[in-house]
Each structure stands twice: as C-alpha cells, then as structure tokens.
Length: 348
Image (cartoon, rainbow, N blue to C red; front, side, top):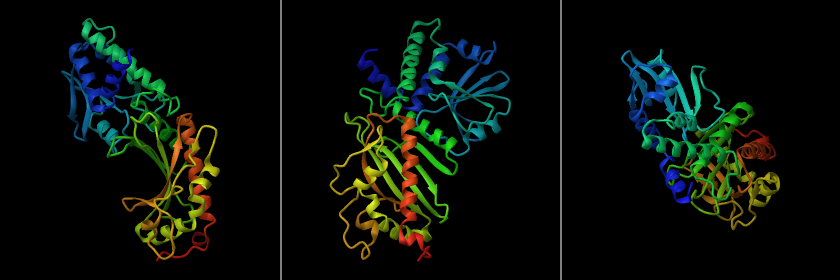
C-alpha cells in the first residue's frame, strides 16, 4: 500500500464513528456477508447509533422478527459505564459482537463474542460488487496492519498513529488482569487527541490517597514521538493537605535523576535533560508556599505530579505495563519513607 494511501486510511479509520459508518455502508451494499455471519437467510437491515433503551448501539442488525444482533466497535475509547450490560438487557435474544483490534479482550460477559475488526471487514472481500470488494480489502489490510503495529514498540519509525491507543488499551487490559486493586484507563487527551493511559492504586495504609501514573504522547504526529511519564498523588478532599506535604517530602525522589535511576530499563528510559528536573518550577522554601503552586504540575486540582520525558523507541505494550507497575511501586516506597506518611499525621 502506498504511503499516501496509508496516511489517508490512517486518518479515516482513526475514528470509531467512521469505522462504524464504513461497516454500515458495506452492509447496505451487500448483506450476504452479515447473513453468513449470523447463519440466516432472512433479509436484514443495519442501523447506526440506534437507540436500544440503554444507549445507542454502534450497529443494530434486524430482520422481520426484530433485533437479531448488536455490534459494538472499540478502537481507542473505553466502555462508557455499563453500556454493554444495557445492550444485553435491551436485546436479550440478540447475538452480541465486540469488534476491536485486540486479540485478547478482558472483562467481557460470556454472551459477547470478540471479533477482530480486520476479520469483520474481510467478510466483504468476496462481495459481488467491485467497489464494495475494494473498500473492504483496503479496510481489512489497514486494520490488520494496525493490529500488528500495536504489538510493536510505541516509537517504531513510520507506525500509524491509529495503532497507539490500541497498544495502550492492551496494556490497560493486561494490568487489569494481572494486578489486583489497580485501576486503569486508556484513550486520548481531550485537547489534542493524543494517546494517553492512566493507572492508579489506593494506598494500603491510607485510604483516600492514590498513587497515580500517567503516560501520554505529547504530539502523535511528531517524528520524535515525544512521550511523558507523570508520577503523582491524588487524594480525597479532606486529605489534600497531607497529599501536599507528602509530595514535598518525596521531592528528592521525584526529581528526574532519581526517577531515571529507579525506573530505567533496557526498553524504557527517562531523559536526563530536563531544565526543572521533572518539576514545573525550581523549588523554593516548600514549607512556606502552597506546594501545588510551587513546583509540581497540577491536573485540575485532583492530581499533582512530576513530569519526565520518556523514550518509547523500544517500549511495547508489555514493557509499558512493567514500567507502570514499577512506577506505582516506586511511589509507594517513597511515601513509606516520608516522615509525614510514616507518622500518620491526621488530615488538617
């Protein structure tokens, strides 16, 4: 596939809405492939974003008896609340398909059948209409390429930007399966649409305080593929004073040289070239000024953190999972060694 064509398909299929629209177009052009998938000879129709009584399903397939199948498509976003459970309740007799680019999808109810998006598009590669065949083959080839790329290094040269959120979702699913008590979320930033992943774990000795790791791409179209590793703390409102003091006590361990020494691996390395050593500004008398205004970055007041440049040229989804676990463990160890945490000061 020529590079300019790849770029066009990258932009086209980097959006779940467009992917669903393309599937609906193929189904409207020739319904035989879907009939074969469902094992029916009845005439069927496909509706997009159809109300199910519990939300709007990506694809709702019906025959003269009613809804016979629901197809949910996922690329980079997490499931919204309990949407899948609502679809099951709304259509108890329908067959349920979860279409994504991940070979392993964790946490699905047994009624949902995972199906690879490239396999779904492949249903139309033998269509009678030449245009339908051509569109289906291009979509199959591109989604197959995304699936393969999402298993390689995040910073591999020439990789499609659309494969990055898929790799992060794979990491999130892996951590959810293997790390009890760890919360994860993977998707895109609300501003620039850059891939990001969050992981958090509540303190085992101080309920209401969470260690937080945030990994995100600064600019998915940048040839340098610059990424950030953010290490921080989140707290219930009543524990914000403790959080601020604790981050100050952990300050030496949160500077870039210390983070690099603790977290560098052969596949994940922290850049040492940082003017403020991971901080927003140079610390000055931290006990006399509001700590979040002093030197730490602040995410809407909920999380304060330090930010470090992460080299992802050799880092794949598995290595990212290891880095996140190491980072959470490192934050917990720093807190255990901090005076304010060790003595268990009451919240102010």
